[in-house]
Length: 171
Image (cartoon, rainbow, N blue to C red; front, side, top):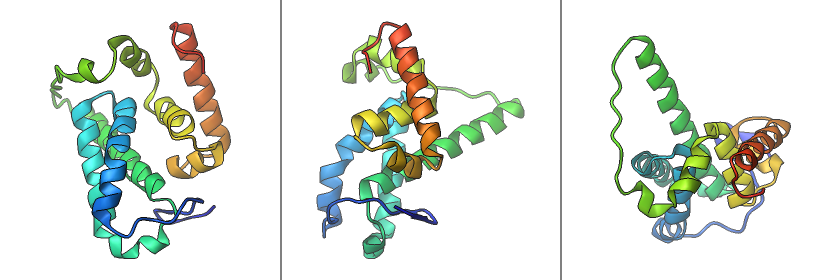
């Protein structure tokens, strides 16, 4: 397990030969995971689209990417972080930010589960999604998130404590 640049080296089955097959198999799962992290359907869709575009641009080099799903998630998380930084910079410059609320968010998840997840920090949500939804170990999740395994475990523990305190599912 090594990270070289933005290429993640994790054990995984062989990559599909055709991008469209990989896209069809992974798009829905990535979109759901990103929705949990962002709390917004439109943001999740844009991040997923950007991540798949970056993978498609490198598709002829996929033999160098051992875990395509992890690579996609990491690219999407990096995009989310960059957007958050840009928003903070804009706020510091006193540029008013307008947020549009998607009225169909509640259709995808029950409102109470969504609200509990929104009580977590984005890093706590990302750690829980990687560990509990995707089933990665803390070592692999740490490579994807670009942090230490102990930090992943601490974020997940903190997130689970917040969920338990709010009456959420025991983790």
